[in-house]
Image (cartoon, rainbow, N blue to C red; front, side, top):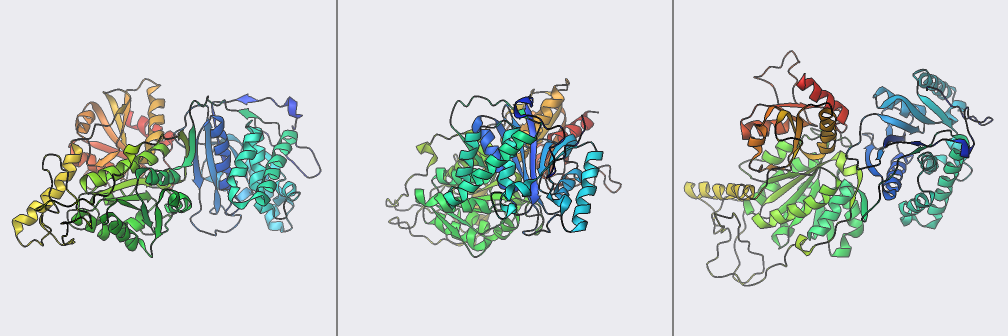
Length: 633
């Protein structure tokens, strides 16, 4: 049913019902967006709404909508800021497809979402109506035009006097609309009111009661207004919570993983979208004896971490694409000096400054092969929020076991997305062993290693008999500068074989679906949830489609080639560029493949096709589903 419900200062909304007359519609899931101008708090509203739902037992996945500029134009499509929250009865692994309900603080931001084709037909729109009577006639006219367009297109528009209601509690409605809307949405979706109030208190805990109290009043006001004026209510039944859960975003999970791993130094330079890791660690790291070092630039951040690692305990440096490019020479030093180091790259759109607030998976080949010379590095990718936590622990262990650089790839979508997962149960095995200060046996070589296990000795500064010259120049096992060509060849061989030694310990990734079939979808990183949902939809129609998600990208586990060979067709699905054979200039001899497709084709000598989008947003299951069906056609 398509209709518009109007709320004016002097009238009751059309179709409004008494609170006890509003039927509650039970749903399996819904996708909600809150959008506003930058600085109006829509992101905080969405994050808080998601946290409340998750603590009730719902599955959630959030996607931040962030403009590229720090202070974009107000009331503009390009300045839209906000949050998408997908809420389900069961586990939710991605942001989904189109939106069911959107709360908009002005008509321009919702118009942007319409033009981006983000709303479902008949989507419910809760729209701030103060612009209708704005003293600037051009603004009032714009509002009326867009409102009529929305209604004409079949959207269910409920006008809400957000500013008018907020002025009863705060002098600046821009600093109150988000909590008012949170109250409205909490009522509409039958969330626990006491839990919502408690979550608001937690959200503003650092600001104190003077900030908490008015925000709680705004939430109550929004709830009460919706109870009297709106004729829509939904309930998404939560699942029983059987164990304690964390509700955090990927960057916070990375920070928690740093602390749980036993690393004590995080060195970084602020860069979007990785900076919030350092914000979180700066608040809590000192409680476990750690420090956050904010360096003067990305190069210094990397070399500071290398120096800390050389001193005895592996350190981590965290960055995004441009910063990773700047760290390449430092990473080469760590490879040459065989100094353990964890490098986290929260990828964003590139190249150059690119799109700082948008997600992309464009750094895989740079992570594997960036820098000059032969510099073998371990490259891993995280696939969800829980994986962000545990992967840091694993990365630290590998780095110190093999005295190598481990690059851990995340992305902007995972970094800002929230998802609940079981609270980790701390294990002593996560931590690094104490720094060895026992005497070094006479004759020990600084770069001795076991050719069967790949394990290398490591001398820590301060160990008796352990003095040697650390250098970035090519050196032999005694750390003497190399002049002999055979010794240079042997040193490169030794460093390369560390990857082979690690590869021998890796298990093949598990298939999602059958072991044989018509089509295999291969992915990596934060696309896992969307890929598996798309595969599940196609399998429901009887197609023999499976998916494989690869965590270790360098080295790759044994057995992947055999898995690929069991399917009629193989296609890599990624959020990075690949040429389309439908383009007039593109043929089989000049086509550029996606990052993972390049690696699989070279490693496995299997005809791996590729599909992807680079649209500044996470891949959606619907788009992947369409690509799968096209491949099967």
